[in-house]
Length: 204
View 1 (cartoon, rainbow, N blue to C red):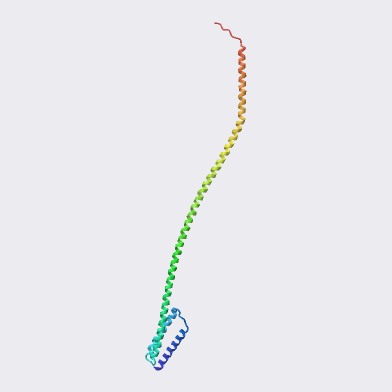
View 2: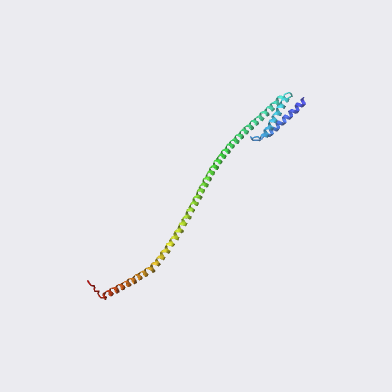
C-alpha cells in the first residue's frame, strides 16, 4: 500500500512540475476545444488520484498541491469558457453584419433590376416612336415625290400651252384679217353692182 501511494505521489508531483513548467514565462492566451478537453481529462485523473492519496502517507501536503492544481485547472476552464462565449458573440455579430449586408445587396439588386426594367421600357418606347416616325417620313417622301411629279406635269402642260398659244393665235388673227378683207371686198362689189343697175319701171 505504501509502495502504491508512493508511486501515485510521484506521478502527481511529476504532473505538478510539468504544469508549472508549462505555465512558467507564458502570457495569458485563449484555449482551443481540444486543449480544454485534455484539461478536463487531466482534472478527472487528478480527482481520482486525490482519492487514492487521501488514504496514504503525506496525504495532506499532496492534497493541498492537488487542490492548487485543481484551482488552476478550473481557472483555465473558466478562462476558456469566457473565450468561447466571446468568440460566439463575435460570430453572432459577424452573422448579423453579413445578414444586413445581404439585405442591402438584395435591395440594391432589386433597385438595379427596376432601373434596368425602366431603361428597357424606355428603349421599347423609343423603338416604337422610331418606327412610327420612320413610317411618317416614308409617307412624307411619297407625298413629296407625288408633288414633284405633279409640278413636272404642270410645268409640261404650261410649256405646251405656251407653245400652242404662240402658234395658234397669230394664225387665228391672220385668218380673221383675211376673212374681213374678203367680206369687205364682197360688200364693195355688191354696192358697186347695185349702183350701176338700171332702174326698173313699174306700171300702176
